[in-house]
Image 1 (tube, rainbow, N blue to C red):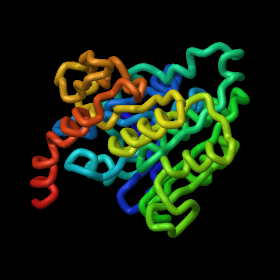
Image 2 (cartoon, one colour; image 1 turned 30 degrees about the horizontal axis):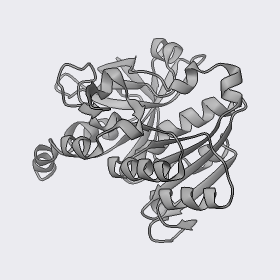
Image 3 (tube, rainbow, N blue to C red; image 1 turned 90 degrees about the vertical axis):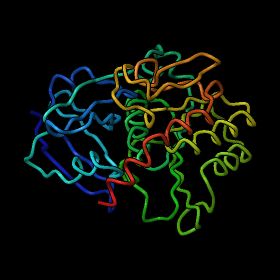
Length: 277
């Protein structure tokens, strides 16, 4: 059993939880994920690690209430426990494999959207602790949907907030903000985009236009997290890959986003029926 030590609602349907998981906390790295099963009847829900503290023996997850199982997770309270938490799974960000000299040469800009902001925070924090220059763009439909803004300010050099409706910060999407920053003369060595699939697709198109390498995370495709179910099968560079075992991060230029978006919608009808009960 994995005890919920802390819980806070970041928005009306997005929840942050700190879990007691000492063995996972000691092994976790930025970019990896966990599988959470709330109870004996619960589905296996893949959730990207948002933070970890090896000394305290804790890991942090951020969950958006979307369907049946995520609703059960979000509705749990401090002091409750989840039946299973498995991890860390997947491959860590390739940034953690770089030498100190390679990291020192990096100037990374992240584009985050929705719950993708939480795993961006962990990667930005990891880089900040090693003295690597980091800028972060967070995009949302309106100012009430931002999460982790104060946490992000503490781990990046510059934070740029964008809203589709212009209610706060830059009026426009994150990709437009990236283009504006490059037009101002800011230089970056890579883009990392984590968020909705459509956002990552257009972030990739924008990065290509600007001549910047880009890494994207396909964690939203995952179901069982072991490669057995095939739900996260995606074409990367013309080859079949599984987001959970080969990723979740990939070179954005190589991802077939249209195929990935079709696959992402395969369970929407079932989830919709459950929510209507």
